Length: 351
Image (tube, rainbow, N blue to C red):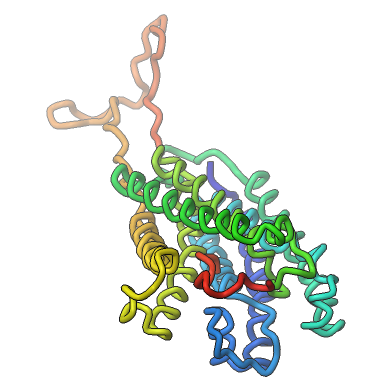
């Protein structure tokens, strides 16, 4: 199924609205906290000294890129219903916890009342826009006009298997580290997942455990969709890989900043696994992005049985239908900021 013109325009407008909301928060952080310090906070570097507490995380920057890419893709192609669905689902998952965490005492001490009020309004607008995107993707579908109209294509066989292995493995590694956090610090459970005064989080983001669980589910769903070469596998997988990327990138930043590779043998076993997890997450995200960036080749439609091939002469104006059509007679149909926690020597964020 593909999207009507009205649905494509509506989806592009909704995606642009979400991009504008995120861009406003990113600009606020750059002006209030200095960009050089903002990315240090995103990377959880201990020497970060922002002049104001950033409201955004690296996930917001990735979502901004996703919103812009989806708005452009929806206008350029009719086969973009899955892109609207995954964008809406991820937006709801990221913004929903803000409805009950923005007013806790920890948020009150870190952000002003005016800033929290604006964040709450933006959360409602983002949730409404995300829900509208999902509804638009479902209500605005139509069947192809003919067998030559381009329909959504899944990944190739090799790309699907590779994406399944990388996305599911990376998501499982993230979830394993998150379970390790809960086992090591049982006092913060379930606050780590639903938020509370005891756990630090960004103003526009979900609690750390909620974010990891969301990304794990997205990676597993995208991975299994890719291995069966489902038409929706590419947009879901690309968004999952994009959300995996910041964890790997900032993990490498921490490795370089603290020269951890130079002293790898001196580190404890758990910290060594942390380093390897960051490297693996980066490689997995890049591999999935590359594998899913190109759709599987679409097979050309079969020859017209009534066409005038060599030695056949021109096609007759009206096919010679028999008096009684045999079963199946007719024309053939054509087809178609997440990441491992900081080094365990440091307590988890907000502890």
